[in-house]
Image (cartoon, rainbow, N blue to C red; front, side, top):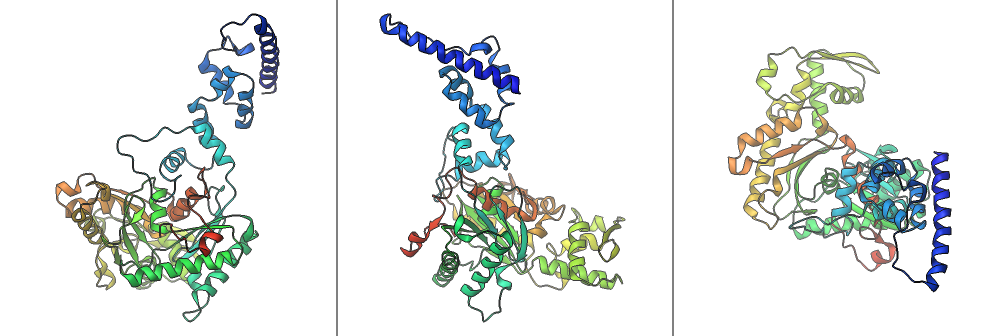
Length: 470
C-alpha cells in the first residue's frame, strides 16, 4: 500500500512538473490541448487500475482529483464510488440507492413514470460523509429502541413512552420523562444533534377529531424535544418507516404491535386513511398470553412472563398447513434462564390464532381477512398509483418475525382473492427483524440531504409549519 501511494505521489509530481513546462511553452507556441497521461500507470489497463484504486481509502482517492484531468476522470467512475458506498457505509447498497432516489427531496415523494434518475455515487458518498450524527428513536408500542444514524443496529432499549407515568399524567410530561431517559442512557446532550422519532400509528380514522388528536400528539412530541433544545425534529409513524426499510414507497404494512395489529395502506409514502386502516384487536401481548395458557395446560411451569416471550421468539413458528402440522412430531427444546423447556404443538398453535382467533376464545377478524379487506378497499378506490401498488405487503413488529408467517399469509391471500387481484401479491417478512421501523428511521437520518427536507426546526415549529407526513 505504501509503495502504491509513493507511485501515485511521484506520478502526481511529475505530471505537475510536465504541466508547468507545457504551459510555459504554450505561451509562445500554442497547440491543441492533449489529455494528460497517468504517469507511471499509463501502461496499466483501466480496469486493473480501478481495482488498484479500490485498495485506497475513499479520502485518498478523492485527493487524486487534483492531480490532473486524467486522474479526475478516472476516479470519478460511478461504479468505483458505488463500491465505496457498499464497503464503507453502514447501510446495504440497495437501501442507499432506494433512499437517495426516492427520499432525498422529502415529502411529497417524487413519482417516476418512465425511468429513475441517474445517481452520482461520488456526490452521494461525499454528502453522506458530511451528514451530522443524529439520534434515532423508535418509540414502539411495547418497548423503545434508540441509537445513532451511523450505527448498524440500535444502541439500547427501554420502556415505551406510554409506560412513563399513568393515565392521568399529561402526555407532555410523559414525553419529557421518556426523552430524558433515552438521552440519559445515550449519555449525550439533546442540543448537539437532530433527532428522528418513530411512533406507533394512532388515531386511525380520517375524521376531524382523529386529525386533531394526531396533530396534538405531534405538537406534544415537538414541544417536549424543542424544550430540551433539540435543533431539529423528524417525527414519522412506524408503518411508513417499515415500508421505507423494505425499499418500498407504496404497499400495505401489517404492523403486529404490542396490543393490536394494524393493516395500513400507504401510497407514495402517505397513509391512505380515506381508504381505511384495518385494526385487529390481537397483538404480541395476546400471542404471549396464549402461549402461557398452553404451557400451563401442558404442566410446563415458569416464573417469568419474560421466559414465555423468549420461548415464543425462539421456538414458535406459523404452520403453512395447520391441519397437516397437527399430525407431525414438532418437539423442540430451548435452554432459558429458568432451565430447559420443551414445546410441541404449542410452537405453531401460538401463531395460528392470527388466522383462527377463536382458538384463543376471541371474536376478532383473522389477519388474512383484514388484509384482504384492505386490498378490496384499495382496489375499489382506483387511485392514480396504478392497480398493483397494494399487492406488496410488508410485515413489521417483533411478532411478525415468526418463521413461516409471510409464506402462510401469501398462501391465504391467494386463496381469498380472485386471480385478477391475487396475481402479483407478495408478502415481505420484516426486513430488519424487530428493528425494522428503527432501520427505516435510520434511512431518513442517513440521507445525503439530511436534515433539511424531513426535519422541522424550532423556528418552523413556532410558525406552526408541521408539514411532514404523519
